[in-house]
View 1 (cartoon, rainbow, N blue to C red):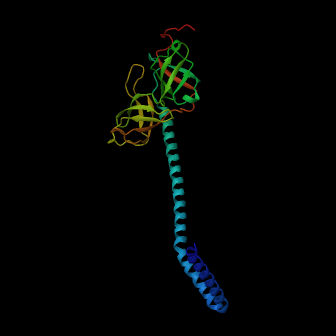
View 2 (view 1 turned 30 degrees about the vertical axis):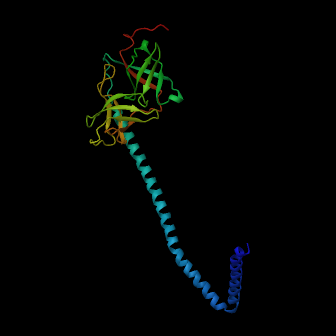
View 3 (view 1 turned 90 degrees about the vertical axis):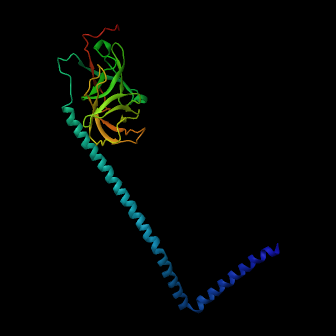
Length: 266
């Protein structure tokens, strides 16, 4: 036990005597001590310079990154605003059925939209008695927003384009490339199965393709916004709807008209 304490005792005494020696030296030679302190300060300041410069560089880089992100966000806002303005212009020329067409336009009011199924479906106050048919497209401001999936006498349920189970054949008007419209239950719309070698640009119009009697081609859906990640050899395209899907109060249903519709007893 004593042998283990000897090195510690020796080091302690040595440090004590060194401290006394330095204290005596500082009082005996004050000028030399001051110069040594100044020299030590100059050396330490020199060693700190790289760290200070690095800190300033990191700070400047952080400010540049924040400014760049702010500019990117502003640029995206301007692009979205520009796309919205283009969509408004397209609404003015959106195709509508002629007045004497066999297929009439049924105006319906949205009566129910569950919060937990906000992006899946809506209920409207028109049904089979008013000429609404299952499979008929639902429009808002001239853009398709869904399709009738269930219909009663005086009500119907419309599945929205943002639903994950919604599938609709569509075409990019500028390139004539076909794809399938599909939602994700979170408010996003995707055009699937588009070829990766085709260059789609933001703002290209996407419309319905010919898929059935109740769903004519050429009804606008929205515009291409961005590209997704390649999956199974295809490049999905994110679509911005031309309609205000968060503000659906009234919709229009393409149907055969109330005169030819079968009456459902109430």
